[in-house]
Amino acid sequence: MLERATFFLFVLLHTLVQVQGQYELCKSLLTTDEGSVWEQHACQPKAQSMKEFMRIRVEPPGITCGNPPERFCTLENPYLCSDECDASNPDLAHPPQLMQDRERGGLVTYWQTQTWRRYPEPLLANITLSWNKSLELTDDIEITFEYGRPTAMALEKSLDYGHTWQPYQFYADDCLDMFGMAPQRARDLTASNATRVICTELYSRWVGAKGDKVVRFEGRTRFAIFAGHRLRDMDSLRARFESNKGLRDFFTFTDLRLRLLKPALGGTYVQRDNLLKYFYAISNIEVPARCKCNLHASQCVLMDGTLQCVCEHNTTGQDCQRCKKGFKAKIWKAGSYLPTPIGTPNTCAQAGTSSGSNCECHGHSNRCSFIDYLNIVTCVSCKHNTRGQNCQHCRMGFYRNSSVELDDESVCVECGCNQMGSLHDRCNDTGFCQCKEGTTGIKCDECLPGYYWKQGCQPNVCDEELLMCQNGGTCHQNQRCICPHEFKGVLCQHSRCEDGKKCIHGDHNGASVPALSLALLVLCPLLTLLLGSAVLRPETVPVFLPPSHTSTHTCDGALAITLLCTLKEPRTSWT
Ligand SMILES: [Ca+2]
Image (cartoon, rainbow, N blue to C red; front, side):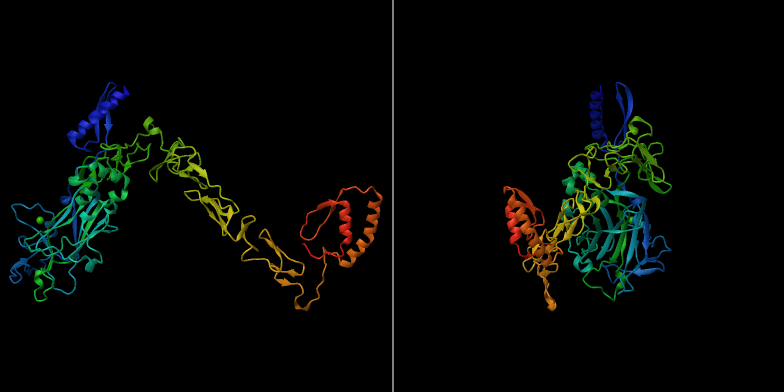
């Protein structure tokens, strides 16, 4: 039954896609054997000309011509300065709104600035276009200039309603001279640099007043890098948008700003004796785009003077960027273009419904809670050493096991940093602990050359290379030199006989030579007598042997007696 319904839905959607075009419907009524249900689809508003919705601000104040009235000439007829700009006369005024009006009857209307009377002071003008709404560019931005295109200008964009700006494209007749950038063309860009901010010389050279008037930001050329010739494969482009947020953001904006930096000159030099022919004039600005509605709306309408998505899928907000009240069982998600060709709606679910009860905790928790002031749903009591809003991170002291899926119980592995060798018990994403000086290894349990392990890595006191024990001393486990009796110091570098001091030889474990000799003198005959009178059999007795061993050795009893009794005096110290 379910398979039949799924098949039916598939056929229905494909029919709809063919009839309606992709992403035009947010929902459709689906008839199955069980009755009718609404099926939700990822959807977006149509692309449209955003010209009529934009607010235009021109800076600096007074840059628009006509107040007071002034005369100007054109680059074509530089000595026929009979044209006049007069802000008080509707027939002779050139206000900013003429950049966005609908021209009728072939009459070109345009905004115009003052002339460059203050040369050599630069003639600068900014035009800010605001929509107070996130938009996604769908084609080329086109700016039509009358009386010549600027010698230099920059196009900027803002993603945050004009708080911050970033360059979008630079335009100059000499990019290197004006912006210090090598000239590039949008059509030379590739998949790896499709979002590069370029400087182009295509639109700034003087082509005569009758030549091309348009300056473009080539959105379409960039789309074609992914969608191919004539944008035949838009699904490829959309899939890229899903995998590369930077690419999608590149075409998203709330505001645009044109910075006009140098007017058309009509030649190489500025003619100082005729500055009335230099000014900017724009007759039209085309911004083809669609409202950004996060694939949750197919309509975008003007409400209270501002564009607003008509949100579906239980979402709300100007961009449908959150779930409606009562539909916050799951975390809000933008709809997705994937899988192609119809995408995924990612509908907000009603709290308490079966589809909404599974909070998205990757199987590490089945409890969620809604945090009102943050407007988020978060998992509670993440298990398996996970943490985070969706139990998608590892707890402190654990790292992500990249060989298993996020919902695997063993997704988080303990760092296991050596307590002595590491700075703390946290590790990086690949399990590497942060080691103390002289320590190395993934877990910080090994020493670098020049260090030895003793409750962590300590710098060598002695070794066989740079810190050699001197004067016949031997290095014991890199920790200390065992010196011949006559020498002392960390590396046995000092003679005990230095500075004319009297050297005492044979000092052994605090017992003086005369005392030891006396003891041997008494003990030897006694021991010889005792052992000699008994049946002399090989057996073992403990004996301390010089020179370098501190452990007790055993040897044949008779041999030990002989050895002890032939020893006149110990020659070396082994302490
Ligand atoms: Ca116009």
